[in-house]
Image (cartoon, rainbow, N blue to C red):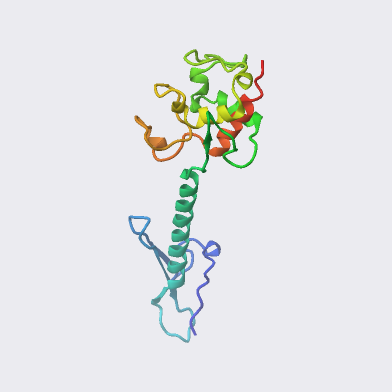
Length: 209
């Protein structure tokens, strides 16, 4: 009678700790190729009369691993497609009346985004940010932005500033077509998400003085 191999590998002793027990792991070079795991179990019953091991293949393990990898790749592709897809919007006059997300933005998050140099806002604009050094002077001061522009106008300026001035240096934060000199990290996707646009709009609308 042969002994059974346990499939709880974390509970197994280290290699060579038990005579006749070996573990061989073979991994292909690319992550897209399947991984094979072979365990060798020796017959330990005196009645067997044999000391050499037998090879036990575990096909379900290979299938499970391959299926898990395929599912992860699929989920990643779906998430990327959803993130890169622009929400539909309608330009009316000189603004966009409806929220890109269908919900109001968060002013606190919007302020943090304005001050984050990765969004480039603070590189060109200055504003009521006494704690922030090296504010820009290439674009209008953001003080009183909520009095100068409506939320509709602010939203369109963030989505596509070139609608107001084709020669503007302000990025079109929610546009992916007809652009030049696009950074590799934002190629094919907007610089800001719809939610981030709404957060900035909500914050700028509070700047009344």
